Length: 135
Image (cartoon, rainbow, N blue to C red; front, side):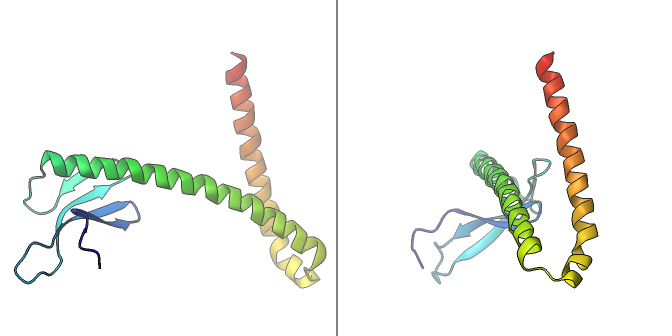
């Protein structure tokens, strides 16, 4: 393990992270991780853990991590959508070339409803954007 460990460790969870201060400067030369805060990425809340008071350095580091995390999540969102387009194309090819009657019966209604729902939302959003553009 590297001797140049970061001063902070962020244990990611679904809507944020637990923030730990990393300490390697102890007598046993062990890695100690002391939880200092809980972060909610959705609402931007930073809660000190226990009776702690966070320093400005702690808060700056946490805010920097939150900004970087927002960027990562945004990139993942758009990447997931591009993958969905790929899956739709692969699904079309599968339905056309390899699917059995039973397999198609199993998925056709669900696929048609999901595609109809998506199409409705996309058309509505596109129309709204065009209306705003014309104003």
